[in-house]
Structure formats: C-alpha cells, structure tokens
Length: 132
Image (cartoon, rainbow, N blue to C red; front, side):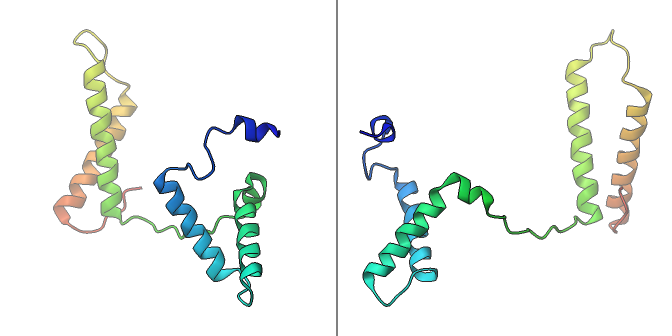
C-alpha cells in the first residue's frame, strides 16, 4: 500500500464544509471555462486533469500571480497613518520608560515632532499636503 494512503488522516470525502465548497468552486470553474463540452466523459476528464494540475504544488508554484494595481494613498491618508504609527510609538515608549531612565534619542524626538506638525497642517488646512 502506498505511503500516502497509509499516512492519510482524512477518509475520502472527509474534508470540512468550507474546503468542500471551495473545491466545488474549482470544479465549476474548470468545467465552465477549460473543459471540452461535447462529451461528458471528456468534460470530466478535463476537470479531473485540471484539479490534478491545480493541486500539484510544483506546477502551481510555476504560475505567475496576476499583477495587482497599486494605488497610492492620498497625502491626508498617509499623514493619518504616520500619526497612528507615531502614537503607537509614544504609547510604547511610555510603557517602557521609567522616571529615572534617560530620554529617547533627540533625532527620534525631532522626527516625531515632524510627523505631528505635518498631521496638524493636514487636518487644519483640510487640504492635501505632502507628507513624505
């Protein structure tokens, strides 16, 4: 008996419901888009070959993923993200520092101050600003 069959933990058809539904989506896609439709036997043959190819880790790793279009953030959104990062950093430093510990490095303070000024200018003017 093959090693895979002896080590297989799930019985045939024993997947969870979500996994079965996702497999149904694959089957439907292969049947509608890639299978020959003049014969049921040929259709099922094409679907089974498509599922074998999709489940092979080496073959699916060769497939190039589609390029996602990257949209740039608006400067106001960028400013708010930088402000959130700054507030997290301040909160983290407040938890770590004690009254006897020295202040953080002066350049950190200046960069933090830079982000605060940019964020305030964005929110006060309510216009787009360059926060880079």
